[in-house]
Length: 328
Image 1: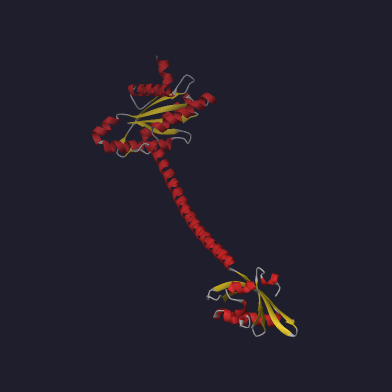
Image 2: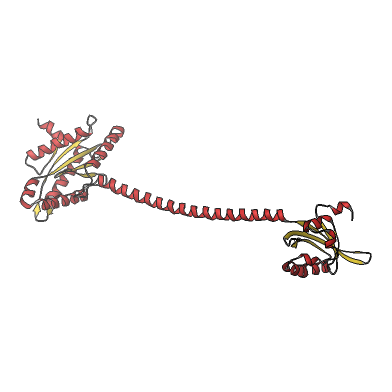
């Protein structure tokens, strides 16, 4: 055998139609840890496990007979120490001097198998990592949904707290804080555009005697029903609030002094004509209209002065602060 073929970097052997090894290069003998003479004349299946023998019979021989060649057959041959050596085999059927031979070339597959095992292990690790990542993402999504639900709940609570902070707990009306914020907004608008507005302080006449005579629960009922009455009697543009105690306040948007007094008189009449259970109450009202010299505190002080005039003039009446100056 040619020396170059004898020591080629792949195993070579040639078998007869019956599978007897006719020739083999040194590389093939070294692969199996045999001397070359120990291989020649032996049946190739002597160096195979039962599984590989069955594969050889069901695939190698029929394929050679039918097509005259095989390519990249994967099988294992046993070494002299009975260790399986994985190999990749290519073969071709040829005729020389009237005899048929099957020439085969084999390449050891140890490194490839190790590489494939590494690839498989890496693939499994990646699949596990993907599974863990998906699980983590699912948990994150659940946490995100929980976070959004908590955010919505917190927003709802904040809105409720904000509403409570601006609402009188007894009557359900807006409270003094809300009124003060609305008043400042209207004052700023007045300085920008000159749009008129007025405020009206409404005080229940002799409210202390109601509490003293009928008790505080009846007094609270009067306050609640008056709040509903004021809300029903106000315009959409008005701001109505409980100012404190038995006092209520209305911000009359767009109302100059004349209109404000007219609105206040209408409200006073409604209060006088509407029974509160078995009681009939009256209210005194003080009105002030915004001017360029007024601040929020000054405007409220003017309305309070007008209210005092209504109280001291016999109650159940409306007074505008400008009437105080004209009566001096």
